[in-house]
Image (cartoon, rainbow, N blue to C red; front, side):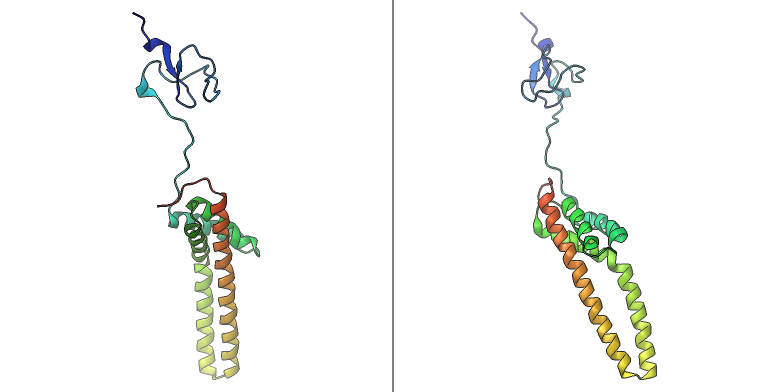
Length: 175
């Protein structure tokens, strides 16, 4: 009786069962010279097929995007979009989740800036109250409105980047 275990091997690339003397896998075309799998032992079988990558957690993706935003967020249009694209790509193919991750990336990156602005606005408001100048209050209102528009622009482009990243990703939908 012939021993079939010595004639059985597995493709080193795709894991298909092949004959041990096969030089090229008929399924995937991978060269079998220098094969690292054990002959006839299915416990050493490794499946090397590409599965879609797992989506990254929302806050991890947002933190990576925020780090990128910290460095390039100062450039108009590109600065807010690129961190959103990275966060959206890492989050997965769900556009809603990726848009949220892109927005969160820019929200996290803007925390230090907003903190400094609040400090300066607060000090300015104290100065205006003590001086009693009404024109200064109007200037502060205009400055606050401009800040609100800037933040909406920044967060909106982050969400747009997240949607673009979701369209470009090879990751599964987040659960």
